Each structure stands twice: as C-alpha cells, then as structure tokens.
Image 1 (tube, rainbow, N blue to C red):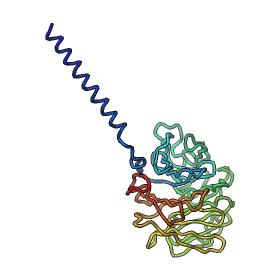
Image 2: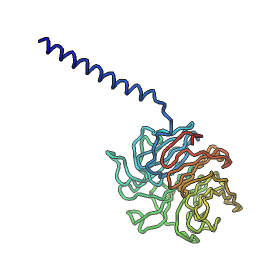
Image 3: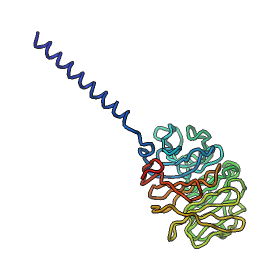
Image 4: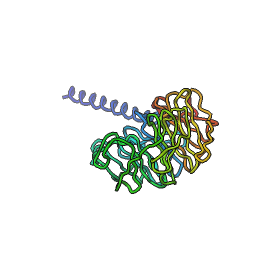
Length: 314
C-alpha cells in the first residue's frame, strides 16, 4: 500500500511539473515581442487598395485580405475568399475569384461586392460562371469593366465588356485603336465611360466606353494602372527599367516618380490613396510592396518576398 501511495505521489508530482512546463511555454509565447507585420505572410497578391477613409492599405490575397496601418500588417477576421480582379470603390470593393472553403457562395464568384470591408459580400452578377482576373470598377460611378476569358450566359465571346447598370446589361468594348497584348485595365473614378487599357505597347484612353482609344503613352509595357483624381492616371511599366509614371489625361504630359532603390520584381499593382494622392503603394510579382507618402521622394518596403514587416526595419 505504501508503495502504491508513493507511485501516486510521483505521478502527481510529474503531472505538476508537466503543467508548469506547459504554462511556462504559453507565458513565454505571450511575452515574446510580436514584431508586428514581420509575422504576416502573403501567399500571393491579387490586388491592392486604400480603404475609403484612407487610413489602411488593403491587399487581396489567396486566403482573404491583409491590412496595413500604423506600420504593421494584420489579418482581418473576415471570410477567406480568394479574391481576383479586386477593385476598390468609395464604400467598399468589387471582386471576382473563388469562395472560401465551406462558403455557401457559388464557385467561381462571378462579380461580388462588399460594403463592410469583406465581412460579407453580395452577388452582383455571373456567380457560378466566371472568374474575372481583369476587372475594374469606377471608384464613384461603380461602372464595371471586365475581360471575359471565355463566353458565358451574357457575353457571347471572349473580350472586353462593360456595364453601367450592375450587370443588367453587358456591352462589348470594340477596342478600336488599341495595339498589343492587354495587361491592365483602370476605370475612371468619376467620369462615366472613361477607361484606360495598358498593353505591352503603351497606355490607351477611351472616353466612349471603349469604342475607340487614343494612345497617351508609348514605348512602355504598362502592367498596372490606376486613376488619381479626375485628370491623372498613374501607371507601372516593366519594359527596360521599372518605372512609375503619372500622366495628365488632358494635356498628355507625363512625369516619372523616383523609384525605390533595389525594387525587386515586375510591377503588378498600384494603389493611390483617394484621400491623399501623394500617398501611393505598388506591388511586384516577387511579392514585394513599397509605399510612399510624398509622391516617391521617399519609399518604405512594407512587404518583402511575401512577408509583411514594420516600416523602417531592414
């Protein structure tokens, strides 16, 4: 009997030590400094924008969204939809892509809209039919421009289409005047019918819903484009040296931004803060993101090779 009591005492003693070790481990985890954005991972990148209040930079990735504010990245607690063709508007965003695992949304998403930063999405059109990788929506007009990769129930053939009535009717963009392979599309924020197309031959502007286009930038491969206010479009180019170029769509004058040193990868997305056009960010296909608050005079690297990190840390 004494031996059995001794064994029970030893077992309790051992379990007590195990409990202390486990609790100590959790305490250490809590006390270890959290290096903010250093721990945020980016499996890929499908879009980049600023929130409507201008306080956050938002990235759309394979498993939902990432948000950057006050020097750090975070993962919002929203459904992890795989957003493609992610396009911000004044009160939310539009997107295509695929639903999160376990979602009751149709796959592919077609076109959806969120008014609550991704907590919920509402169906706009073509759910269960199309995954639009090229999609742009007017920030204020909410006119939708897409490239249909194949025919569907509302688009008889592959090509560019637009709708000004949230998908009730879709219209073909004739694309007259566009040369080269399309790489980027950008809808004007406030002017109806105005859209820009970037190709490997330059940037083209239409003021009649894509019926005809005028080339406003040549000799560049334009892989990203976004409007900054009513009269300016900002593009990213990858032919030769990487460049970010601002173009006045009225007089066609252009100016180059100073690029961050050692920017790695081809420019894939550009975002402009609609509350402050001097603040912009761009992403590359190497999963790097750079940001400036002074129109490119100074830059910070805020994502490096798919890992978010704090501003100023190398």
